[in-house]
Image 1 (spheres, helix red, strand yellow):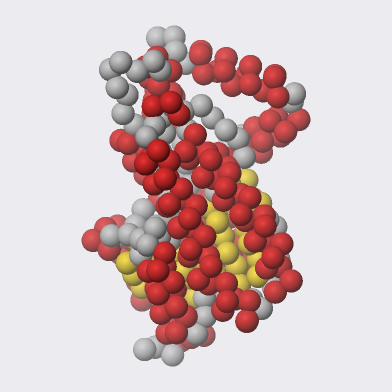
Image 2 (tube, helix red, strand yellow):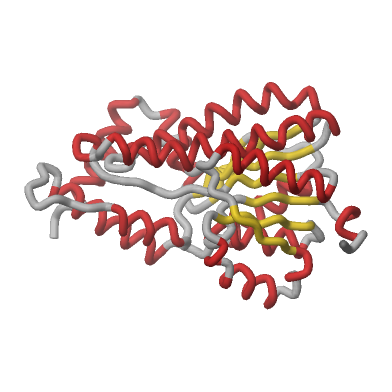
Length: 288
């Protein structure tokens, strides 16, 4: 094994086969990190390998298989990386998906799956890196949250709830780990062009006798429009790299068009005004 690897900081990224995870893996490799990029199915590695090849960082990258919902695998894979490289300096918890639909019509299994991946999987991977980071009194854990971790939207209950959970967990963990020199950070992106939209839309099924057909069609129309007009995620990737390089990063980084303003409005307006605004927007979507 090339000895230089030990001199490079080591980053572990989950959900690296597409979207933020893929782009973050390549960007960190460019910054000189030895990147261990994990994905549930390593057969989906081609896009990451092509991007790493193009950026001339393929030698800085190692692809490993990890389904974050397999908690014992999370422990084993992380331990193996620490054994081989001596440390993990940066963990980027990015694995996740978006489940949507109206609460009344969603099966409990869908809620469980959403939390297994977006929340419990994230906690399992994080727990696995904590002993080593605490002992070294050094490390950063970057949790990819969302504007949906701060603001609830109709028809996105499972996703929103899982991201709210990530926010609360990260606040608590930040306070636990700061005395040990370990920084826990939340990145809160708005809407960007990544596969989460198309994958999320694929999962939504509207039954013909649904009481919410009108609303769901309006929301899908809205989501399609957002997906088409959303910017490329470069800004989010730059922020992750900036946090990785910062000696003392903050807890929260909202990123994206209108994200800070939306959060400010929600926190400052009386709730009744806020809900009127959201519902009006929502019902406006219904008209052809």
